[in-house]
Image 1 (tube, rainbow, N blue to C red):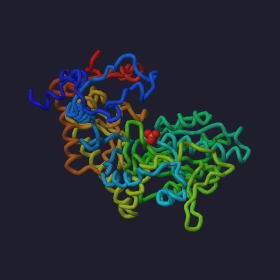
Image 2 (cartoon, rainbow, N blue to C red; image 1 turned 30 degrees about the horizontal axis):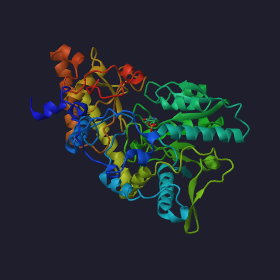
Image 3 (cartoon, rainbow, N blue to C red; image 1 turned 180 degrees about the vertical axis):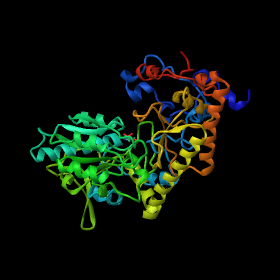
Image 4 (cartoon, rainbow, N blue to C red; image 1 turned 45 degrees about the vertical axis):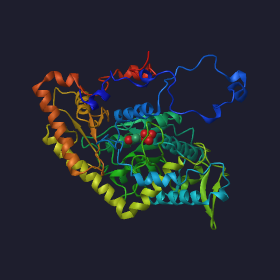
Length: 488
Ligand SMILES: *Cc1c(COP(=O)(O)O)cnc(C)c1O
C-alpha cells in the first residue's frame, strides 16, 4: 500500500488514536504560572479533564489536511451539479473580502462609508443585471430570498385589501422544492402547473389554474429542465391580467446573465443566488446570499435596513412604514456581497454576456457527448445552461452517480426534477474547459461499459472512497456526531 492509499484507508489512525499524554500543539500564555482557580474562579473549573486528544502541532496539521483531502470541492475536480451552478470561486475575491474584515456591524455608518458605498453600488448593479427597480441584499440564501419576495407580494396584496381573496401560489410541477415550501411558509395554498410535451409550462393548463384567487406565480427561466420558456411574455400577461404577481427564481440566471433580464420578461420580483451566478462560495449550507430585486410598485415593502445615497453620504434606511421588516441580522452576508461586487466589476457587461454564452455552449456540448456515450436526454432540444439526461434501460441513476465517485469526479444532480424518471441533471458551467468536459463524458461512457461487462460492479460502487454507500436517511435522522473511525 503506498502512502497516499494508507492515508485514505479507514484503518489509518485518526487524531484520537494518535494522541499521547502530555503532547501539546500550543500552550496558552495565560496558564503559565497562574493558578487556574484564581484566574477563572473555582466554580468554573472542570472536575475531570476533558477527553480530548493530546497531540503535537504536526499531528494536528496532518489531521486536518488529511480530512480536507477527503472533502470534495470545486477546487479539487469537476462538480456539474445541475441547478446549483458550481462554478469556480476566483481567489482574488477572497482577497477583496478579507480587506473588509476589520469592520464591525455596530460601527457608526459615518465611519463605514466605504462598505456602504460598495453595498449601494451592488444594489444598483444587481438591479441593472435583473431589470428591477430596487434591491435588498439581506436574504441569506435563495430560499430565504424566496420567502422575502413572497412576503412582499403578500404585503402588496394586503395593502390593496386583497389578502383574504388571494390564497393561491402557482408552481410548475418541475419546480425546485423550495418554491412550494416558501409559498406554504408564507401561508399560501400551492397549486401545481403541468409541464407540456415540449418541456415548457403547459400554457392551457396554466391559464386554467389562474384566477382571482391567485396571489403569485413562481417560475424560473430557463426552467429546471434547462429549457427556455419561450412563451414567458404570454405567461406574464396572463398572470397580470388576473392581478397575480410573477416571481422569478433566479437560480438559473447563469443561463441568461448579461443577455436577457427577468425584469424585461414581466417578472415583478426576483431573487439571485450569489453563490450560484456570482461565484461566491457555496458552503455546506452556510454562507449563501440571496438578494431580492423588485419592480417599483413593490419597493415600499422591501426589508429594512437598506443603503441609500443622500448627497455624498451613504445612509442605512430603517424607517419605512410598509416594509416587511428585517429578514436577517445586520446587513446581509457582507463578505459574500464584496465577492459578488468584485466579480461584477471584473467582468463588466461584456464579461457577463460571455459567462452565459459559454455556460450554454458547454452544456449543449456535454449533452451531445452524453448521448454519444449511451445516455438519453429528456426533452431533447437545444438547451440552456443545463440539461436532464437518463441512463439506458436497466441502469439506475443512483448506481451511475456512486460509480462516478470512483473516478474522482462529482455526480450530477440526481432524481431532480421529479417530472423525469431516473433524472440526471447536468450543469457544467462556463468555468470548465473542453478537456474537462471530454473527460467527464468519457468517464460516463466508461461506467456504462464497465456495467455491461460486470453487472455486479454498479451495485457495489464506489469501491475506492473512505466510506462506501451510506444509509442516507439514517445519516440525516440519526447522525453519529463523532468521527466514524475515532475512539468509541
Ligand atoms: C438552488 C435553488 C434554489 C434554492 O436556493 P438556495 O440558495 O439553495 O436556498 C431554488 N430554486 C432553484 C431552481 C435552485 O436551483
